[in-house]
Structures are given as structure tokens and as C-alpha cells.
Image (cartoon, rainbow, N blue to C red; front, side, top):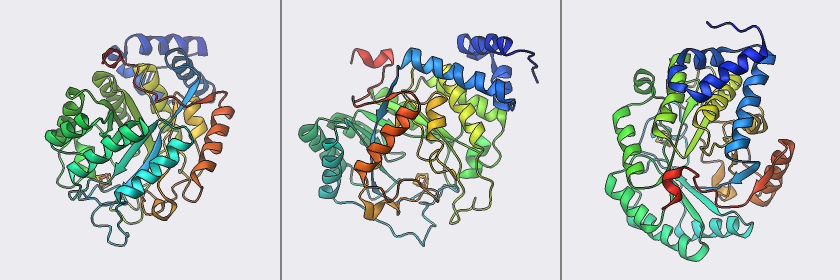
Length: 358
Ligand code: SF4
């Protein structure tokens, strides 16, 4: 392990990581293992400076609509897995979705994230129709998060007007990935991400911190993977065990380690949009402000109708299950202010160069 005597020396090493991540694997691991409070403060404030330089002080808002909790997969860490027989399944109608979108548009939010489990029953044409209606009626940026799908469906939705797609890799470590999924290959996940990039989506990915078998080495490789792929959005959250899953008795992901991964990802990827995730707000306490102070720049108020919200239980103890959406905005405003920032109501498109001339 590397040793540093002074915070000044630590800043020099952070500069090396910032300038030359590929040559800094050992140093990235060192920062992931930091425990000293002064040194940690130095890491988080370096990440915060990078965020300020590349993104500015605005905290972007993405309105979340979880339109179905049906899922055909068995991810061992997720409460929506198909074996979760105690869960009441739901799927919102087109009208319900459009009403939720009307609600978020009425409070001036310009981006909707349409999220569901990986539902084999999802009709691609139905979703394409909804995307077109959102575009023509509300003019919002549309982000999809509906899992691994064939290239033709990704293309159909892109042609219908979808701007962005979120597909978390969860871990880039093939063994950890294999141990957390049944009947799923990391290669098919990677292919989907490449398909989405080739179709011109603004693409988001991310990882869970604390998955069974994950090591500091695999987290360091995750961070370098984010840089390699040059993702537009990166979401990092702690693993939270769900009692209805195979990983029910695993230890939850460490919050401090999660914040370190966020900070290093900000330093290395520089201008990606990074949420202070809902999972970070649901890890026994709400750590989203800490996330915003460690490099994150996005908050995601939930506009799923209250009668469905608690049913979208990827992990237990999810925050913001009972708050009316307007109250959510006040809470987000407060979080931004406590972090010394302000809410940014723009669509918050990617600022990666490849999208600027599209
Ligand atoms: S993580 Fe996604 S694909 Fe896996 S079980 Fe949960 S909802 Fe389904």
C-alpha cells in the first residue's frame, strides 16, 4: 500500500490520477482503502472541485416514473427478481404514465426516466407510442431504463425520440457478475451497452458497491471501465440486502466506500452526469447530501403514483415512498442548498463532445 505523509503529497497523487488514470491503478486502490479522516476530506474535496469545474453548481433533476415492476430475471440482489412471489406485480396504463408525466412537467422538470424491470411482456410499439406522445405533448428529454433488449427495440425507441438509456453493469468483474445472476452473461450486458452507444443514445451505466465477492481491485477496474466507455451518466449506489432474495443475509455495502467510488469516478470521468442515487438515500439514513459533496450532480425525485411506489421494491427501506411529488421537490431544493448549490431545471443533456453536434 502507498504511504503519504502530508495532505499536499496526497493532492499530488490525486493530480496524477486525474491526469493519467490508466497509469494509476495502484493509486486508485490506495484511495479506495483510505480511512484517515483528513485524507478522505482531501479526496472528496478534490472530486468536488472537478465537479465544479466541469459541471458547475447546478443540481440537475430527473423525474422518475417506475411504470412496471414485472421482471423476467433472477438477479440475486434485487427484490423484483422473478422468484419474489410475495410481491404484488403492477404495470401502469398509458394514461397513468401520461398523468405522472404531466405532474412532473407541471413542476418544470424537463427529463423523465421511464423505468421498469426487464419485462418480457413489454410491447415495444406501445412504449414507442408513449415516447412519441411525451415528445409531442411535453417536449421532455426521455430516458429509458428497461433492461437488456434486442438491438431492433433499442433502435425503434431511439427513432421514436428516446434520448437516453440507463443500463447498469452492476460489476465488471466476471466472477462477481456470474455469482449475482442466474442465466445472464456479462457479455450480453456489454453488447447492449455497445448497441446503445452506437445508436447515439446518451448512455448511463453504474455499479453496486458491496456485492458478494467484490474486491477493491474489481472496484478500481469498474472505475477505469467508466472512463474507457466514456459514459454520459454513471450511477453508483450501495448494495442493500433484500429479505426476499438469495443475498438476504449478505452485509450491506459500505457507505464510505460508495462515496469513495463516486469521488474517484468523478475525478477520472470528469464531465459525466452522476446521481446521488436513491439507494444512497435509503441506506439506513439519507446520504445523498454526502453524495452531492463527493462529486454527484443529479437528484431523482420520484413521480411514480403513490399506490405503486412501495411495490417497486428493489431493496427495502427505500426513501420517499409516501411523499407527494411536490414535497419531493422542496426536499431536493433543501439538499441542493445544504450542499451550497441550486436546483437546475434544464433538461441536463450530456455535455460529452460526441453529443454536442448531434
Ligand atoms: S435488477 Fe433489474 S433485471 Fe434484475 S431482477 Fe431487478 S428489475 Fe429485474
